[in-house]
Length: 125
Image (cartoon, rainbow, N blue to C red; front, side, top):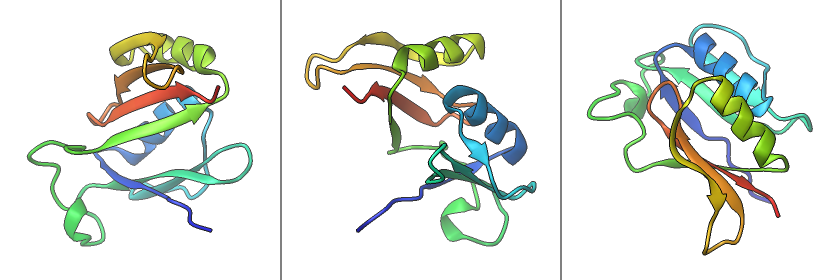
């Protein structure tokens, strides 16, 4: 079995955790200003947030040239419409509105998180 627990560099761990909690109902489980672990309702780790420059990790020392360059965080969710509404309520930076992807035939939308990471939120069916 292989699992993935991505860690992204962010400016403000607490603010980013709150944003992801509101958007995707992920729960912060670690606490602190330098690192947070966000889990889904089943208790699986979905995403970790790491403050830029903390703990001397070489790829998390500097957000330049652009945070998230070469990365798309692709989330599959059961209730894409409800999450789209949450994104709108958060006044998120929507890059592609909710639509039916002609390739996957799934409903999806794309947005940026507060730190400039590009997210695609897709239905599971």
